[in-house]
Image (cartoon, rainbow, N blue to C red; front, side, top):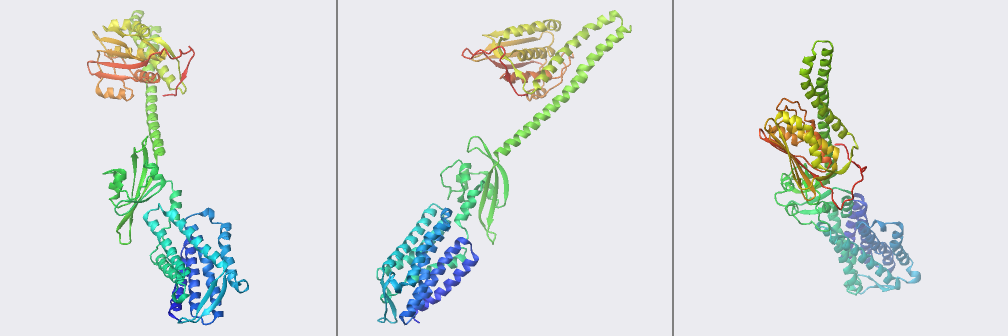
Length: 597
């Protein structure tokens, strides 16, 4: 036994033990690294026994054991690199046969070398040194095996370099360590092939292998050197649709997945090394929440993209066993669609509330404002028939009855129009008509009442007044606005209707100098809420007319603007589109369907 063989024997036994523990304790991927270690250990152990042998037969026996490691270690290394770099399409039986066939042939040729001398042309014992050493003359197959040996090494290391060239520093260190572990022993082997050998024959390659692999093996077991497996990490990141940011203790990004780039509108750019403030800006809520060092969830609106997006943010701090902050994980989930659905549901709930409120008001109107006057007329007729009320008394009451019936008629017309507007698929029949003529017709309807109340009606016209809209809707709109102005105006008040031609629209304003609207009711009207007030002569009102006006104007592409000062008067204005000359004139039967309000 000499020092060279003793070192190999002791380190080989230790390496076998480390390899066995790794194979039993760690996953399939790292096991193949351990199998490579095990094959190198077999090579080293057998070489140690060869160096302590005294006869040629004993040396040749141990060479046959050595070649279990020498033949199959390069193939095991290459297989490990394929698995470690995630090239699953190559991990199949065909590839295995391709990789392991040549090592098997090499080993069989070594076992039968005495019959063909393809691997070794000649083997002798050299007794000139301090201990007997095997002297070999290389055969043709030896070169083939050596070529496979180095091609396996080079190809495996290329896979590692290409796969982890752009990885973050943690995974790059792992792959670099593996590459060094492979290259250092091969460098010793090249030196051996060029003839630089102790005592002319000793191969230092197994020594280099053993010390490199023992170092990595201890790292695997004691320090979890490869506990974070990059391919496993990549697969998890690919499967997770949430955006993930991993931060170090200084709140710098050390890892992220592709969805984050989409969220941050930062395609193709690496975020590694950037701080949270660089990504999100100073004093951002995410930065302030991370500094709390506690698990927290919140919703965040981000306008990095158009339109605005909504995200659910989860911040998970990471602490070591000593409760020292080691970083954080930020999960970002796109909840824009859920938020939009939630807003729609809230909007629908609010619309339903308003509709129910309006329907309640409708039933109140029917039961009170319609039922009361009609029952009153019926009772008046009955009392007259029964002789309780004389003919002269009946004719004295008749003007008041007539006014009540006028109010009932207007109310009934508005109710029917409102009910029609609520029907799904209501048809808007747009046509070209003249607003001036329509307003003159409305003035003729209100002329007598205006005269009785001492109100002056006037119209101011600037330019043409032909518009393209639903005539019936606009007719009812103008009638309601004038009727409303009449109700809240008295002696010496003026009701003006202004028509002003714009470029593509006609501006309409109904203005009065009457009672005006108090600020609270004005705000309700702007929010499309109904109000009930009495006119200057105690005329009843339901507020339904103005709601109908707002709805009809909106359906014809306009919006009602309301301005009012209490005790000074009110302005109701809106715009309607003109008929364009380059627009095809609609057929009289042309109808436009709109959804219910």
